[in-house]
Length: 317
Image (cartoon, rainbow, N blue to C red):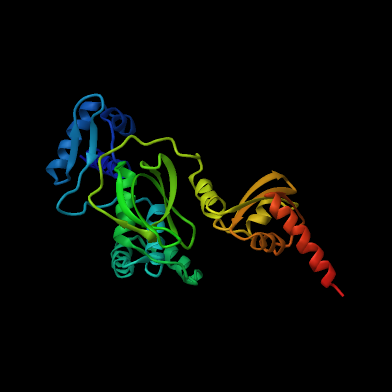
């Protein structure tokens, strides 16, 4: 009886980790046969857990939405991560989630073992949030987009560009990316037949979500790198490439993901790519980093740096 109960808890935990499971995959994870998986699923249903199933080769099991929230099964590291995430959300960049984060944190800490509460409290005491000057994002919008990414469902929304112009978008959402101050959605724009990067605070969703789609191969296996390129370089009139004579990790410590993209060349040098609508802005940006550098492109920037260098040299007493 104890072994069966432990297996049911393990099955419930697996169903919470991934949206869809085949019977064979669950049987392998639980080290039982497919028939035992079917019986265990029926036991979960008897206990009130809504487990949906579909027959056939493409079928499988999925934990559905019920009248009440089922208990979440977290290991020690997950519990600490959730607790710290709730503390951060209580004063973070997601608008309207502060109060609910505090309530959820209170419930979680009430049932946490003392060893985990001590870890969370130690982290909380040692951590100070400076706050954010960036725009806040509506919690419902963020969770709706995350759900659409997970379910591979198309999204429709109105989007406000940097210049204030608005457009209607129909996209296949892929991932949410957080830069530290802003949330971005990486998605395939069906009307433009290309991948795009959208600031979530400029999105106004038009529910309901659209039909399911087959996920496409992303523009880059490293979605964060691609999003950084789009935000820091790709959207600007001038796209610069520099060789910086300093290790990549040293330069990256002074360049945010939204202001430049750093790629190592060797142990002592790296490539920095940055964008701006101003040549002077690019010249100042690279100069104030404090490293020796070479400008490769665009040609206008190479000439602009020469002019500024002569001017600064002439200004020296």
